[in-house]
Image (cartoon, rainbow, N blue to C red; front, side):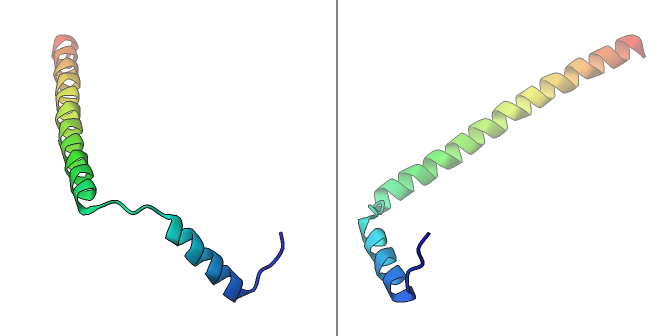
Length: 65
């Protein structure tokens, strides 16, 4: 791989950053809200899965204990 000088590297970096399409405020807000909603749904789901496993284990332990 050929080495480039730092000035050329900075020019190439600026050119690549200029190509990036940055999200707007509305898009950032919507995706942030969607992430929080999905986190809450995942927490509720795993709470109930954990609760069902705990109930099943308690039932097995009381039956054999």
